[in-house]
Image (cartoon, rainbow, N blue to C red; front, side, top):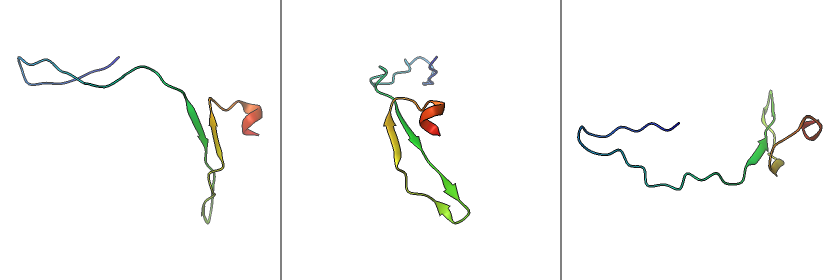
Length: 52
């Protein structure tokens, strides 16, 4: 559900393509010294087996 606000009497318009596109997942990791390089980028979702 999308919400929008506009001045009274005007239509709320959002000129954008709202169709769903491909899903990308990023697996990030952090240590006490900082972030590790992001090597876990894949198209779709991570399953438990992918994550391990």
